[in-house]
Length: 476
Ligand code: HEC
Image 1 (cartoon, rainbow, N blue to C red):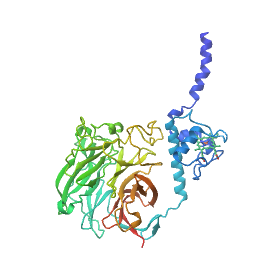
Image 2 (image 1 turned 90 degrees about the horizontal axis):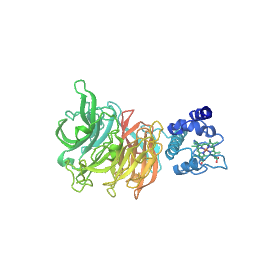
Image 3 (image 1 turned 45 degrees about the horizontal axis):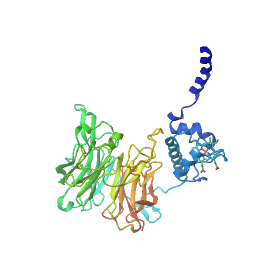
Image 4 (image 1 turned 180 degrees about the vertical axis):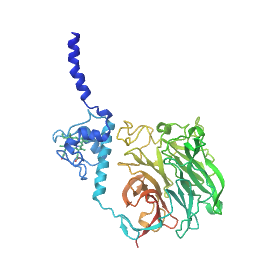
């Protein structure tokens, strides 16, 4: 009896071992196992349609594609996968399909690689590229403008550099800037000039600050973003004051997600600090990581900040639940604050930042892990904000600027978002906090680290790889 039972069980057990465990599969394997037989290994189609040609017979939005995978289409021979796959696996497949679709579109469309002197046509304005600095910068990160027409540029390794009004890069660094521990994605990042600079001379820096676990050999860095201000006199950084630094215990050796941009408004400064790879720390108001901040421009906490008086709340908190925001600007029309944030794969976001709100990372996200495994089953939750838009595939959003100038009148008040991985600048038109137009206006010149409208009305772009500074000038 016992033996018979055992024998009966053996083949069953062996079968279960052979059956692939879809729940542990990365998205590319999942696609190969379940979809490639009909849609092609390279997604170019077969019995089922191609996902690369931009044609969607059964609906083209992410939600449509999700529904088609979940519900299938029995008559046409498309399986319903909702009983086989979880919501997040289906979402991962949508991201995967979108990435491949975008890749195919990019290969097929010949976006004119903007060359100096050559005219690039876009929906509303035509421009030429003028190169400002093409030599001598290493990994530039941010640009800011001084009233005399010169510009300050940060280099990630820790140097603050000066570019004169006529475009000459000063070979010297500004001496005496704070010691920066550059590791991973961190280093000297943001530079911003106080709106009353002519009266007060203040310049603000955002950088990775910290200490070494092994001080002697300067190894094992432990860091987090810090904000200071100072003045420049005779090519030296002087009068330094700390605006925001956090307790040593929050410093980490993670090399990722420093966030860091600075925006001024009405005597306040706003800045994000990334979650430093700490995921759920972004949800904890007693932990500084993964948050947006507002302070008086001298570093004091405003009394009407949303978390003031909450037990253990970190100084300056403005909003929580952020991953890695590296674009920040304020809408000149109504003072709304917007941020772009690097999400996980397929989850980059544009957020409208309001005080006291929770932007959801890592409880909700539209993305998946970089290796194609799921992060969380949910994309929305009560009490957590939805992004204005999210990018699938991810663009690696970095640098954000509302155009305030007059040289491109049809771009007035449009939002320009830089992108590292996609090497793009996206122009977004925002009406009533919604994106009503989105267009790639620059592509493939390099990884876009910062976009900034200059006081001269030109749009400046800080590129990595090549390490250039260029500007968009009207074609005429
Ligand atoms: C047995 C074959 C088969 C398999 C396996 C299969 N599909 Fe399909 N799929 C089809 C057919 C047939 C259609 C309908 C094509 C048409 O209308 O021209 C379709 C349609 C779709 C559509 C809608 C396309 C459109 O044009 O709107 C999506 C999305 C889709 N499949 C995704 C998937 C995914 C993801 C998988 C794997 C999890 C998968 N399919 C597996 C046969 C298959």
